[in-house]
Image (cartoon, rainbow, N blue to C red; front, top):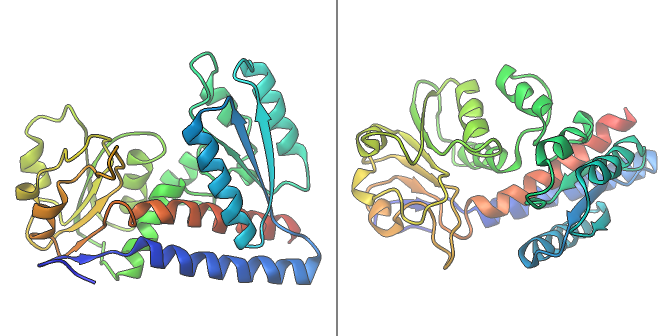
Length: 283
């Protein structure tokens, strides 16, 4: 599957294979121990996009042989009430992974809520413990979208050692951990963001570009280095990524489409890490 130059990195197909492998692992764990992996999702309020996203995750769980437990809390829930709910799930031996759907509302201390997740159940990779593990290259759970990006790069046999990787974006669950994971694989990493001076000149040096700034078509096609690998982790209204796709695809060697690139891998990694958490729990 290709455009005029770049080969599309098919995240949908890779995610399907990942979920199939995850389902086989879950079935084997249940056969061997009687334990069914369980992911608990916590939703505060009734944001339509969040409700849809959680339902999609529940459906994917079912396909992967993972039991899902859903906790719905009213929009008026306080930080203390949310922390207590997550703390109870962390203490429940039948729950192996916990996902707090965000955003949770401006009146809630989201970081305090995330930190209530036990590190061994942080299958979404959102706690400070998980972030530190990514930074130190220690065992733990990676942030799901960066983890999906790394799996895509591996699936397409992209060599990382010594390559110049540019990450445009600095969020705690995407840009920053993506850079850490690339650095851990011996890439030379530069972090940029929407306020970087002369961003174009830095992007032009990237062998591997990760666009995660949340602005439609923010990266211009003419700034892509010929032969570069372009990972577009943005998703904006109208199915538009952070990279101006058509001109970028004329210069890149590999590029992720939006949708169908990074997005499907995010949920696939979440499911894989939930089963891994269950496996660790019963060892």
